[in-house]
Length: 137
Image 1 (cartoon, helix red, strand yellow):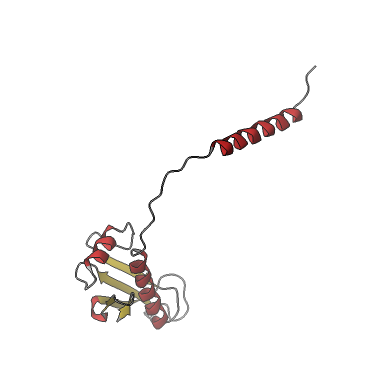
Image 2 (tube, one colour):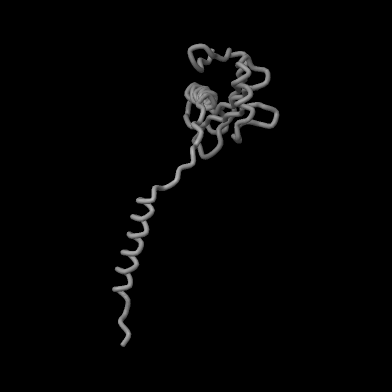
């Protein structure tokens, strides 16, 4: 059971986890041991509330396929258990991230005084630079 929040959780049977061989350089066991984890979570067939499903499907993330499946590959650690925990934690983070609603941005205008200060600063800087130039007679 993967706990997302106090009232939302995902049963283990909805998360498909398979062990695969990790990529990259390795030692003697690189071609023998399947230490990487491939996690698949089908959003449409899950027991998540509709709000979560809708937000996950709208998510612009390369880990979410067109069919609505979240695919996570974990291969940061040497052991299968740590990679499994890492993949589950990353799934939890993806699902938690959609619950945060961004505050709507309100357009603001700089005050007249701040605009004046900015222009005065630019004028002063321009005069300083003008004094550095060569004097032609």
